[in-house]
Length: 528
Image (cartoon, rainbow, N blue to C red; front, side, top):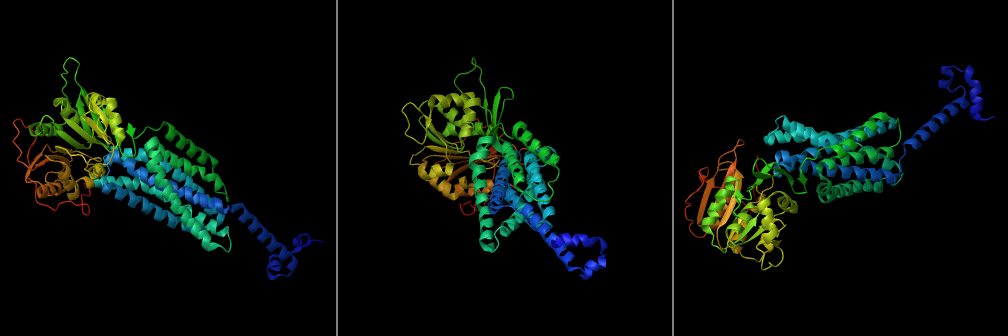
């Protein structure tokens, strides 16, 4: 008779003390064997193939880095893009990753069924929190989150929870990967770490080169949530939990991805653009900052002139009109709305211009919505990276301004530095090295448009550079806005600058204090 069958026949006459004392060893062997078999069956149920655990770790790492880069992108329309915003995003997300790993390690030590249920819950929470991130950011901004403090609080409240949840499954997955290859723990741990790094690299490339340029930030967040949900069927073991919650989360992610309103009217990996048409004007807004504006002229009133709208561009044109000859060749670093190049070429039929604009999407939007600039581009525009055709006068180069300066062999009569990233000038375009290069290729005046507080750090550092290179400098500023900032325009020349006859009333001379000149090594860090 089998051991366990005999044991069962005896079990009816046994007491608790008989079992504990080992009075019937056959029954004890049956009980222990059955328990061991149950444990073995439970382990088989929760076991996940080594390759599957590595794939899950890689995918979740990719999702985490894609989410981090998308967070920095979607922040731009509300708080701009600067060293401070990216520092805050990176620190917040990495802090969430750290806490998620620590909590995940605690969860991995729990009974297997409970741990696996917690891992699945974390994946569902990741999907929902990532998908809803842009909506939460808009709500906080609508409630009045402004400035550096508002930006830091918004980043923490919106992006920290999802960063915790996406990393929480990793310790349990790492434990399963090591258990799947007994005796090969060292190589298993190495594969786990490598999968995390490769996933992060893949996520960064995916966000910067694919998802953000092609589908935008809102859909990228939804895609991150969808990938987290797709990991659920591969996480087996323990109670499966409520299928209704999973289905609801999947429906929410799908709805947000398909029906959610995009954060930008036009979006690329570099810009978040909106076009507004209040009255007779067309306004181009980039990352929440008014980038350019053009006044639409009626067919009857049009005489070939270009209607400038922004006061800083009007002052700049008055200065340029006074300084430049009829056949001037001007470099514009920062295309924006192409209003100043259009004004120059329409008023001087023999003048030439090269506009360096880093984002091709900006040029595309200008051609769609800004009629005067679009007409000028159509009539006289050409690829500025190639030789100029005889009948073309506006070269357009889609490149970083600093890269173009370093590589070009052309010479110019003047340069307009009017490049912006959100509400600030890119740091690498306001350094001593940049303006020293301009001095080599530009024979005439240098015009610089800044957005800063009166006598602010950006204005002081840039003014210090120009004072080292040019003997004659004019500094003016416009009206201060509600955030305490204004356009500060610097004109620098090797020859004296003649006074303007009809200078705009809202622009006047300003005093700029001494300061350290910005360099490539120690430069501008952004508004605080």
